[in-house]
Image 1 (tube, rainbow, N blue to C red):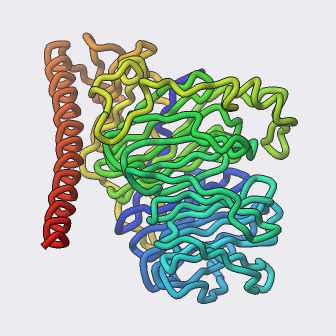
Image 2 (spheres, rainbow, N blue to C red):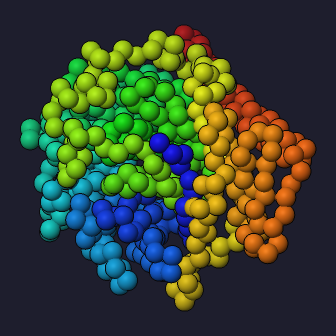
Length: 471
């Protein structure tokens, strides 16, 4: 398995990136933003991006249909739009909710569309005529996210009421409720096998439940700030997360450990998505950038159907993924409450490969219909700088030059202009490396202090309220 490498960088949005989704054929990537626009990014280096304008407020969610012929978007303007992903950017619009639309998701057959909203409800619509079918409304607060299961028979939802609900689509009834005592989930997702679900929580944790036993089977506490987005690799063996601590993390679900920490965004990372084949993943953040990464995660095994990306049977899945409650028991040391955060340098953090991408101010211009799309493509150069050691790091600067670290003691500098290639002395490289490490530690420390301060303020408010009630 090779390390992830940065392939492309897109920057034309004018506000935070909120949602990403790959086209089924991986030829395009769609992004939504608080700037109320969608962008359709091409993978061909000479092709131009398309900007779709129609929503009158922030776009919270975007999703391709399984066929790739439609893109759905949900917005703070309470409307859902169905776009034809072409140069014309034609769309149909309908008012779906009485509150902001937080999430949109197509069923695997492409015939139904699921929407969730700040009006505390979820609704299912026919795609062909946008006809309302039924609603699910047992949540008592905003519904942040709702997704279909791979076979379309189940629905999972998460809400600000600190619950995760599993629904039967045929009966429209809630089958089970998972409770989150320390925070609410920002996003939930089904495992490709359909037997497990994962969620990213505001308490900085990532959790995986088995929906058959309805028990928590894995818990990761490696982030130090809210986990905003999660995505399963299509083969089901890896989980990708994006956090407000400005990092992306990749977890190996078979071994139950963190394997990569990626530093690429200047500020909170808000969204992540895998391509259907799993050979690319994308990330978007508050820095208004979309980063596309090339990854070489292991090839899907023979027990996974290539067409459906699902395990052929649950027994085979349990034996291979170790995600069933019988074959995997959570490590007690890894399951901690918000008050019992692990130390800054956990064993997983020390063993995980660190890939650092630091940028100066981007030189890319804002998108203009008359301008060609400018793409920073640094794939081949970045690949050569990945260290195979456990403490690998690479510094990537998106202006005049790219600094790439082969190891901790020596560091080479590659100028984008080959005629002006220069080098950096080991002493300077070591000094810069030490500064970067100290800044990273300070960032994590500040995040933890902010979390504790918030908890203290909440406790004081509760005590004051109790005192007033006693009077």
